[in-house]
Structures are given as structure tokens and as C-alpha cells.
Figure 1 (cartoon, rainbow, N blue to C red):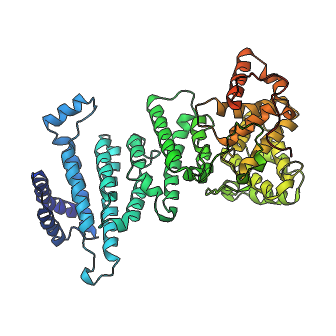
Figure 2: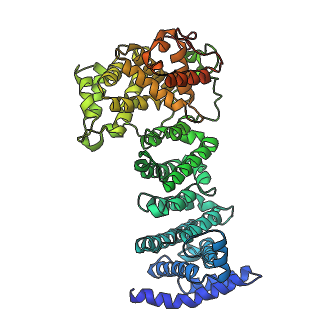
Length: 535
């Protein structure tokens, strides 16, 4: 430890004990707070300089050290009664630090004095908060690497500041967007991929009622991309664990926590899930069907969903079906990643259907060198080609450049690649919009035109496995499957895979009953007229 740090530590110790004694008083007063803050300001500890940063770090060290080494017998007994493992935590010094930081942020003087511009005070407040968070993150990383990590202590400080600094207050209201942004930066730096041992606390902080809702309610939706980045980081971290056959208890708990976060978003901020559905589905494993369904079931709150079980529902006549959805994800980025020319080649083919060999080359382009498939590339390819098909209007389905690509991929990809490709299409079956309608027609067209029943079986698998999990089910998924099993054009019930085994037959009949809202078992000859007009 350098001499400057030692000097600040020696000077700060009596001030820290003085603050603890103030907090212990039964009748605390604003006068006592103001006098203490004035002493800090006089000593220069509230300034944006090296001494000020050292002082903040020393305060955090004092509080964290006291929280584990000065635990009273009563605190230890309480921790034992609550079944908490590890060292008991004394929250008193942590709460004292939280209160002190709140007061410092509220009353920090504007640098430059009274002559400073009107924006100097808010700027000084944000700078001080940023320095406090940086000091705490520095100590958190050091503690994490040192092997004696007490995540509950750090969680207590972060959650206290989230609550205090985002509560309604005339002094803090003007800087709330900057406060939220500062916490976003901190949480991004502490994401689970970097600190797996902090993952549970991290998820609870990110979904905190004084953080996530306020961030998503910021003016102009400026907090949306910040929240999207945090959630994508969570899903990326979970991806390799959720791709395994068996989940460990900690991973299962994290997965359930992520589902709860998505449920909150689905209920309170469905438009957020609608607009970023592509980015989220891009980092969720194919095996996480319910998690994906939660995202794809979102629809704008000003929309009233047509009942998908309405007999002979004419989807293409719905007024909403011609409207494009808003997609805030940069879905074409994967097509040009690493200097690839695929995007320009793809656009050239979609425009002229030349060169003719292009669709045949895609099979190798979507595969990696080790033989695995580049899932983000497949997802981007499907959506980019689909948007091109939609722009072509009535000519955008049968015998078109987009359908040349789709049919080639469906017929030529190996089963694993075809499954990922069909899932990328199914990810666009959402609420009523022109993407849902187009990709529903694409999937049904691929089914009807397939020369290999294995392709039809895999299309059915992709749809059914999304329907046999708990609700909610995406609206577009329901109308597509209902159309498939009801329209005689697709001859669904005569396919061999629907009758290959008694248990499979029962599964299909059960799903069909559920989707058609009827108690009459389907028959091999079909069960009714079509709901979408033929293309």
C-alpha cells in the first residue's frame, strides 16, 4: 500500500468511527449530518481527485471489513437460525456506509463554487457516485480473486444504493437517468461470465424493482439497449450450462430466476421483449423451449390478439397482419462479421437470382470448420432473407429467390442443421404482423412441397415441442400448427410419423385437441377447412 493510501487511511479512521457513532444515536438529526459532511468537504474528501478516490475506497474497506469481523453474538445467532452458511454478516456498518454515500451524493458541492454553471452540481453528484461504484467494484474483484468472497456484503451495498438513490427525491430526481446508467455500467462489468460466484446476487440486482422497471421507463426508451445488453450477457453465460442434458442445482436455480425475470418483462414490458426478440433468441439454446416461448409470446399492449381457435380464422385478412414489427436488434450483423462477403452475395442473389449456384453453397457457409453449425449466422440469414421476401409482396413466396434459399436449406442440410434452420423460422411466429404471416406461410409451404417426409417430420417436431411445454404459446405458433393439422391440403394425418408408435399417436392427438379446442379426436382424413388462403 502506497504512502498516500496509508495517510488517507489514518485520517479517515477517526472520521469513520465518528460517523458510526452518529448513526447509532437514537435521535439522528440533519444538523449532525450537515456538520459531518462539512468536515469531509473541508478536508477535500468530496472532491473529484486522487485523495477523494482514496477516501471512498478506504470507507468501503472499513465497512466491508467490519461487516465480517465485528459481527456480534446476536448477529451470529440470527445467521445460524436462518441457516446461512459461511461467516455471519453484520449489516450495521454496511448500512452506515450506504447512508453516508447517499448523503454525500445529495449534498456534494459543485466544483467551482457558486459561480459554477447550473449543471455543475448534477455533474459532481454523478461523478461521486461513479467513483463510489468503482471503489466497490475494485474491492469486490480483489475479494473474489482472494478466495474469501462474501457476496452478501456487496449485494447489501449495491441493493441499498439502488433503493436509496432511485427513490423519489427532489435532490436526486434530475440525475436519475445518469444514476441508472452508472449502475448499468457496474453490472455489465460484474456480469456472470466474469464473476460466476456473484451470479445470484447479480441477477437479483439486475431485476431489482428499483432498477429494471425504472431503467425501462426512462424517457425515450434510452434504457432499453442497456437492459438488453445485461440480459444478453446473462443468457450467454447460461448457454453452455443449459445446453447440457442435466442441470446442476445452482444452474437450475439461475434458470428459474431468469424465467421469473422474463415473466415480469412479459407482464410489464412486453414491447421490450417484442423489439429485442431476435437478440435474445440468438443466445438461448434450442433446448430452452419454454424460455424462448416466453419471449416470443410477447405482443404490444395496445393490441388485442385474435383468438387463434376461432373456426376458419382468416389470418391474411386481419388488419394487423400487414404491419411490420419493430426489430431493434442488428440482425444482419452476423452476415458480415469478420469481413465476410456473405451479406453482399446474399443481397445480389435476392435481387437477381444470380448466380444460380448460390443457394447450393449456403450449406457449407453456415457450417463452422469443426463441423458444428453457426447458429447466429443461420438466425440472421433466415430473418434477412425473409424480410427480402416480404418486400417482394405477393411474389415473395413460391418460385422466388427467398424460397429458393429456404427450400435448398431445408432439403440439403443435415438433420441438426435443418433443425436449427427450422427453429430460426419458428422464432418469427409471434403476434400478428407481416413477419409472422410470411414465416408461417414459409413453414407450411416447405411442409407441402417437401419431397422427403423426414423434412415434414422435422417441421412438425419444431412446432410440437414448442406446444407441449407450459403456456404461454406464441400466437403465430398456434395458428401455424392449427392450419397444418386442419387443412386437408397438407394431408397431415396420413403421414407415417404421426402413426409410427402408439405413444406418438396419442401425443399428436392430445396436442391437436388442445390446439383445436375440441374434444373430437382428429382423423386420418383431416379435420376441417383452411384458415389461411393458399399462396
